[in-house]
Length: 288
Ligand SMILES: C[S@@+](CC[C@H](N)C(=O)[O-])C[C@H]1O[C@@H](n2cnc3c(N)ncnc32)[C@H](O)[C@@H]1O
Image 1 (cartoon, protein in one colour):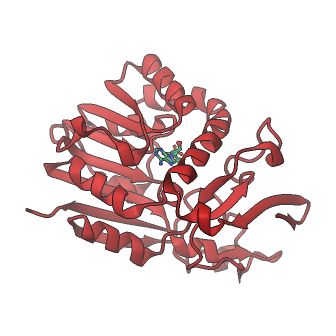
Image 2 (tube, helix red, strand yellow):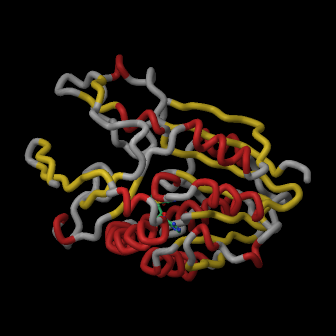
């Protein structure tokens, strides 16, 4: 199905019941789509090298507050769904002794490797579906960090939460900063006022081709020729429940108005800040 949205034509449809129960196939499709989208990240590599070489970080104040100074208290930070490694190496600049990034896109990890070579960072990049993160990392993450557009691509949240739990070291912390699912329910009208979208909060996975103009935008391959990809707005209840079930103990769950990817930048200033567009979690492993 194609949806005409102004001058844009978007390909978007609900996942079929058969697709929606096949986690491996949805992840395989997502992997192909992210390899395509890595093209956009290649254009950002020079900027990432400059940032990391300069000792900077790409992280938001909300994340920095939770992560804190890592010097002397983080032997290993594990970044799940690390993409091109810019946020991962930001953790190195915050003081982690070693950083490990996990992502299933080979093209993203090529970029991460180039970033490592340019900066000399003590980084390891692991090409894997996050649900298959190697067990050799179990119990070694003094910090497990993820988010910023990660959970929506995962189609089995219980399996993801179990991976986080097994990665945490005895003193380890999980810091998650993620898009708020409520975000999917709001758009802006021509006057910059919030309006409801027709997104069904409880619908489950949605298949699409093409990327939001505020983020990946157009690729060299036409939208119609791109791989289908599967995303979903896990509800806040589903996210928190999966983490609790896996044995994570919450220290903080906070909702933020931050428009973390610029997807709502057209909202007028007097309307800004009244809808949560992101949330963060600080959690530890429950004692067994
Ligand atoms: C929006 S990025 C995450 C935020 C990232 N820090 C950045 O710099 O943009 C999403 C990343 O998740 C990865 N990804 C999606 N599903 C995955 C999965 N099942 N296993 C591993 N990586 C996955 C994609 O390849 C992509 O690099």
